[in-house]
Image (cartoon, rainbow, N blue to C red):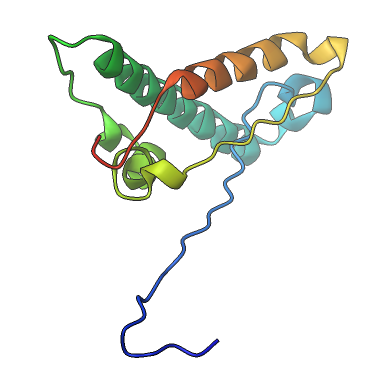
Length: 128
């Protein structure tokens, strides 16, 4: 591809983030490894804070008389996603959710789908 002096320079940021928590740690035996258990607990805490940000975004969109501050600075994860949920890249942000259809993972699947439902209900534009 040849760029002329009038062509716009484009850049792309592509992130893949695995946000697996500790839901199955007891079943898999990971609870005996304290380092992994601590890491999973921190991930779960960040996921809760991400959910709070998503819920606040949805609340701000559905309530016209009030604008609540979105708590992006509560964790590194939410701070990382701030530009992708409110900035210029927001209109090009996608979320992929993986679930396990196993009956043993029903509670985990239900929880993951609740995140997806909240995320899907948010209409993000560049002006948000």
